[in-house]
Length: 89
Image (tube, rainbow, N blue to C red; front, side, top):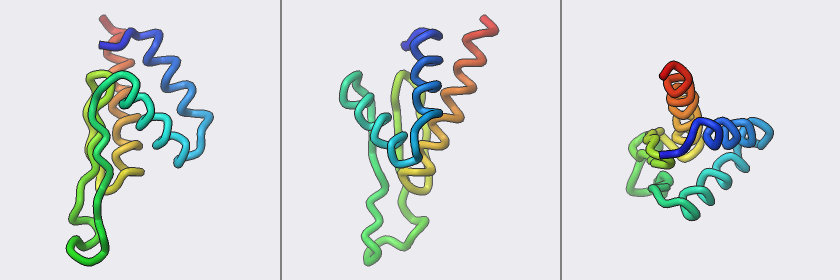
């Protein structure tokens, strides 16, 4: 599991990035540290928009979204909650 300090630094770094760069940063962190980055795969033919799900699992934090951008947003929200929980302990 990631330490409070490292998670705090990672979230602070994400704050300064554009939405597209946040996705890239999280995807790279998954590659470097392990986890899951499963972007949505809607092809516009077999899957209607909203029928797919994207998943991110990084630093022991799991999130899903209706697309990659939504999963990224949900992961950041979950990471902030985890950070707050770590502060309480």
